[in-house]
Length: 166
Image (cartoon, one colour):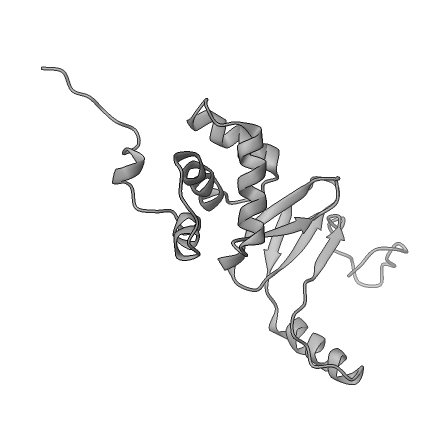
């Protein structure tokens, strides 16, 4: 008796990914390749660019084309399902629009993107808008930095080198 092990259930037996579900809710026709691209984007834990999405989709289906990935990503952005991000480096990267309001800190040395939310910043943004005579309707914060050098423990009375933070 032969036992067949299937790593992934066929697409029709799988529950829709969260991005696929958003596509369906917005009335988009879901082809097999769109489903695949939606799944790749839903499973991404980073902020992939189109080339990243293409490589990941290609690993799952060697028939997907880069043109299809570009068209699908553009369509998902137009429908408000994906948000385009510019973290430097000359490539647009994408973030699912349903992740909730958050900001990004980009490590300029490694390209790593750290997501964060901070209520103090949100309040400060509202205060600044009010001070300037506006009601805040939205905002986005992208910080670019590099890891600070670790601060060594200082002996009492020892002077700190200039330029170091405490």
